[in-house]
Image 1 (spheres, rainbow, N blue to C red):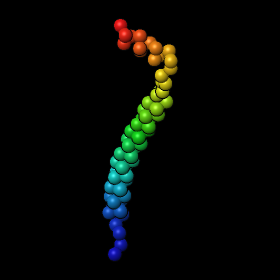
Image 2: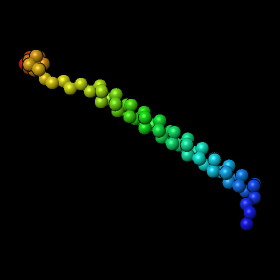
Image 3: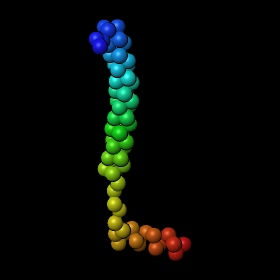
Image 4: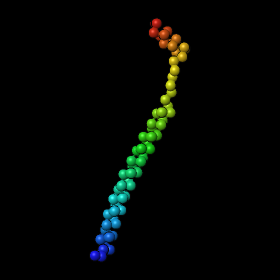
Length: 66
């Protein structure tokens, strides 16, 4: 059984349409992942651990006494 060029051409066009849709979905997912990673990296890098010092403790104590 020989394949007809029109059938093969139609099949290839359908495959290309599906692949293009898949690529769009994957590209959008990739951008979302990259954005989420960037936001989380910014959050992590902006975290500053503030360790209570004697000066900070004294100020809190003095305010509490008033």
